[in-house]
Length: 454
Image 1: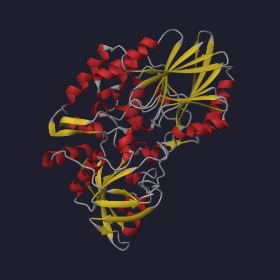
Image 2 (image 1 turned 90 degrees about the vertical axis):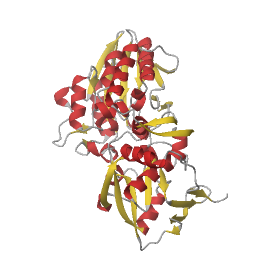
Image 3 (image 1 turned 45 degrees about the vertical axis):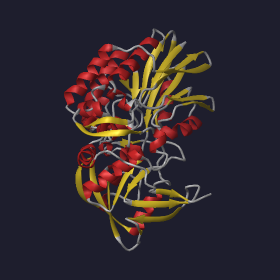
Image 4 (image 1 turned 135 degrees about the horizontal axis):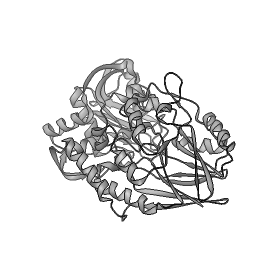
C-alpha cells in the first residue's frame, strides 16, 4: 500500500499564517512511512507573502511537510525564470516535468535537478511519477514567455514508456493541465492523474484512470491510496487540524517585515470575493477594481478579468495595502489600450464568451466601469452595449484601462493585444490603495451587467 498526500494551487494560503500552519499540521499528521507528499503546481504564488518574498515563503512549508515530488503550475513562474530556478535548487523535493523547455530547447531546470520522471519505492511498491504543465502558460503568465512547451500528451507518452521500462507498479501523472486532464486520461494508460489549475475540487474516473483535484487556497488535502489494483481517494479538510507553530511564526515574520500593513480605508459592509461571487456576474469587488483602473488612467472604460481577482476573506473593517495585494497579488501595471468601437464590442462579448479554459461554463469572466452591457436571458448573446450612457459606436476610438497581462495573453480577452497599448499607470494594488485613500471603499452593484427577461 502507498498513500499519496495530494495538494495543489494553495496560492495565497501563506497570507494567513495560522491557516498555513494548520495546513502543514494536517499533512504532517497524515504522513507516515507509507506516504508520499506530492504537489501539482501553483504552490509558490500568487499572494501577498509570495509577492514580497519572490515565492520563497513556500520553502518554509516544503521543509516542514517534506514534499517528495512536485511539478510546476503557471504561477510558479510569477517572479521570473531565475527566481523559479533558485527556488527549485533550494527546495527539498524532486521536481518533475516532461513538457517544459527553455529557449535553447533544453529541458527547463535540468541543471538544478528537474527531471521528466522519477520513481519512489514505498512498502515494497514502486510508483513512477511524471509531470506536465499547461502549454498555454506563456500566454497566461508573461514571465514564462521564454519557455517552450511540448504537447503534454506526446510528452506523457514518452514519460510513460520510460517508466514502464523500469517495471514500476503504478504510474502517476502530476498535472497542471486543468481541463486537459480528461484528454490525458483518454489518451494514455495511467493509474492516477493528480491534477490542479482548475480551482474546483474533483474526484473522478475516466477509462480506469482516477483523477483528483484538491481545489484552491489550501482548504483540503486528498489522500490517494494505491493498494493492489484498487485506488481510493479520501478528502481531508484543513479546518481543525493542529497548527505547526514554527511555520506560523515564519510566515508572520515574513508578513511583518514586508511593511504592507498601512491602513488605506475602511469597509462598513463586508465585500465578498469568493469564486462564486467574482465569476457570478456583476459584483462589488469587481466594480471597485474596474473603477479604480479607469480613474487611474482617465479612460473611457475600466476592465478587470475575473480570474485576476483572487479569492479570500471578505474585505471588512480597516483595509490595508496587504489586503489589496491579496485581491490582486501581481506586479502588473495598469495600462491604457486604444480600441475601435467594433473591437470594444468584441471585448464586451468576451466577458461571457471567452477562450478561458479554467472554471465552469457559466462563469462570468470580467468586470467593467463606465459601461453597461445587455445580454439575452441565457447570457449567450450580447444585445446592447454602452459607454457613459451612449451606445458603442463602431467608428469611434475608446480607451480601456486594464491590467497589462491581458494585452499579452490570448487566453483571455483576445480582442485586445500589445498593439493596442498606449500608456502605463502604476501597479495594480498600488492603484487600488490610492483610489481607496481618495474615494473610500464603498462599491455598489449598479446594473452594469444586464439580462433580458426569459
